[in-house]
Structure formats: C-alpha cells, structure tokens
Length: 62
Image (cartoon, rainbow, N blue to C red):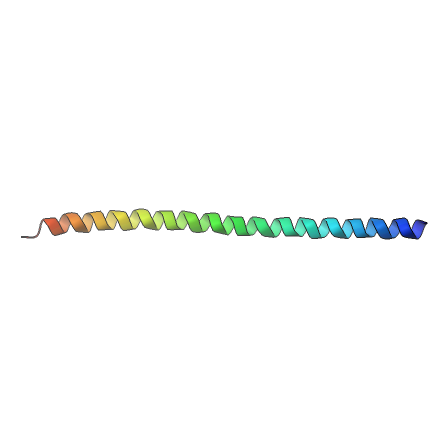
C-alpha cells in the first residue's frame, strides 16, 4: 500500500511540474505579442507623421 501511495504522489508532483511549465511558456508568447503590437503602433504613428509632412511640403511646390 505504501508503494501505491508513493507512486500516486510522484505522479501528482510530475503533473504539477508539467502544468506549471506550460503556463510559463504561454506568458512569454503573450509578452512577445504585446511588444509586437506596441512596435506596430509606434511605426504607424511615425509613418502618419512623415506622410503628413511630405504632403504639406508637396503642397508648397510651385
């Protein structure tokens, strides 16, 4: 009976370790997605500003 309990406890500890590892892996992916979204937003703002400047300067050409 002791061997059965020891085996079940060992399986439970192994299962907890695998589940914890999975959760941490997902958080890295979420972090990368958030950084990618932030970079895309910054690039969009810069492109809009450059486009507005170029359009304004093109209007001044005679």
